[in-house]
Image (cartoon, rainbow, N blue to C red; front, side, top):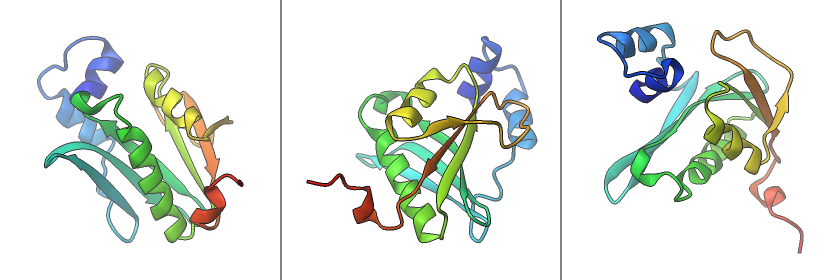
Length: 146
């Protein structure tokens, strides 16, 4: 959250700002039965995370984050594959997300992995871009034909 605050305001986070951001955008629902939070580890160290909120027919991707030492190593792709598998297992037929304009690396990651920009589906205070990916019904369906 410190990085999110710093990037949004283009300055270091001030006292209490991270706590305020967490209170403003809580993640308490990223636990069963309403969602999940996946943690990625590399060599025994926490390397990243990604969350899903379960909706009736779709899942919302949130809190995708890869720590600086592991950026550019494929961790984001691994996290996306894991959340997509979890969403399919929960019965979701698609994943949606919103993100900010300043998070250009995130937008590029989503586009590389088949997420397409769609019209706004929410009115989130920080939402500036909205994406969706239709999920195949089986993992085998996601593999290209030979």
